[in-house]
Length: 230
Image (cartoon, rainbow, N blue to C red):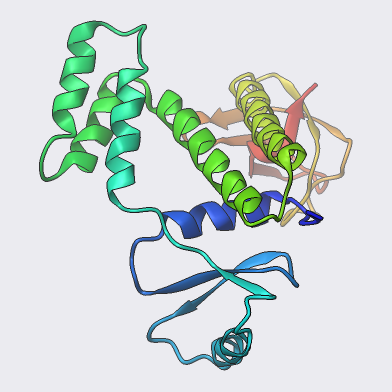
């Protein structure tokens, strides 16, 4: 019976493991600890030595599942598939993008091109969803989650994207004269109070910082991520 607990951290680690073609070590899914763990080829840390011994003893794979990374050629195919589904763009733009992924230096040219065309966000959304689906199908393929688990994992990603968009939209409105409410105080608990409203004196949009008068009466620069618009 599938019983793996899905968390953003666990799925993100699995996505990274499936993308790791460095051959500098190996990744495993630890069913007992419900996490992705790795061992490197050269480091001889005590914890890694203990992990290697546990993996060697687990001959029947009762606890550890080796994670085979996806072939590096898959990354090129993902770029091509992304370009081909951009049906709302001019044909000349698609042709240009397809040319950028031919031959040596394809990844650098592609990254430059999506910046020039202003579609980096679309690329990340496409790539993130694809990597999420691949990780969830890996878990399902090893009997660790059901179809309901796959649906739950996709919803977790969609919720994260929606949350990030709300935060970004809110941060754009954090301009001089606006009022913000404190939602977290990590690293600044001596300056801020959760739920307290502050007035923005100034902002540095490129650095995502706002200037306020803190609880001590001092004028300070603080991250916009600590606040929400009132």
